[in-house]
Each structure stands twice: as C-alpha cells, then as structure tokens.
Image (tube, rainbow, N blue to C red; front, side, top):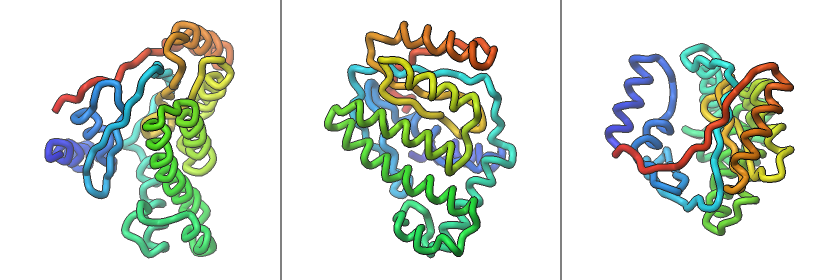
Length: 227
C-alpha cells in the first residue's frame, strides 16, 4: 500500500488533483475475475468474484479535466458537510444524521453528502450481492449509483446519461454507471457475457444517432494488478 500512497501523493502535490487512492490501489491490487473492495479508512483491500458477465466501457468522447475546479469543488463541499455533521469523514455518517442537520448545510453541501453517504451504503450492499452471485441486483445498484451521481453529486453529463439510458434499453444489460471522476469520460456497463457483440453494436449505433458522435465500446477484463 506504500506504493499506492506514493502515487497518490504525486497526483495531489505535483499534478494538483485532490484525488483519493482508488486508481492507485486498483492498479496495484487487482485480482483476475474479481472486483475490489477498498476500505479507505483502514487502507485494506478485499475481493469479490465477478463471473459470467462482460464489462464494456463506452467512452462519451467528452474530455474531462480533473485538475480543474469542478472536482475540487465536490471535495470541498463534502468536507464542509462533514464538519457540520461533526465527523471527520462522511464515511462515519448515516443518512438520518444528514437529514437531521439539512437546514445547516448549503444545498450543494447537502447534495454532495447525500451522494457519498448513500453510495457507501450501496457499496456494502453491492458486495453482498456479488458474494451471493446476484448479478441482477448488483446491476441495479450500478444504475442507482449513476442516478445519484446525476441528481445529487451532479458530475454526470448529457452524453453520459444518454449512454446509460441506451444501455438500459438492451435486453442483455445488467447495470451501467459513469466511471471515474465524471464531467465527461466513460460509462462502465455490465452485461450477460454472450451478448457483448450485440450490446456493442446497439451502443455504437444508438449513441451516433443521439449525438452524431462515433464511439467504439471496449470489452474489458479484470486482471491481476501490477503489485
């Protein structure tokens, strides 16, 4: 984990992105055919199986710049909400606490905290679904995550929303959400494995019809990390 900390420090202090440790840890501690559970409080990593599905990345081709102010603004709002809740991190807060002090928070502080607190709960529930091999339920948590990003964190874009909407119209879909920091970038889609080719054709044609942009979805595999 020391390597992950070092890489995060380089992004924070040299590049100027106030990011967490997700990307660095994922690159180092990946496990083939598993998803990763990262506990950022204890800096520990667990794995849950991911079998019988295909993961497809769809690039909206909307460029995002996390060094800019939007990403930092989200973090600032989350930190301000945590202070008003009387906790060091939103990780330790519950939704009922947030609702109890809503009047003391700005609208954006409340929205950002709402997303974070509900997202942490979805991660916990999502791990249970994976361990029970309930991919359909896990996919629903992915959609709920995207909706929360769109409606509360507000780091989605019209193009990302179109991609998620298109995914839901394909019979093989299981789940879809934006991935990364948002404000552009890509969506990650979980589909039944044997329908990958059909799903890619559906997304390619549908996105071009809606936006006039040609994009090429990629089938991805979870592999062992570089550690």
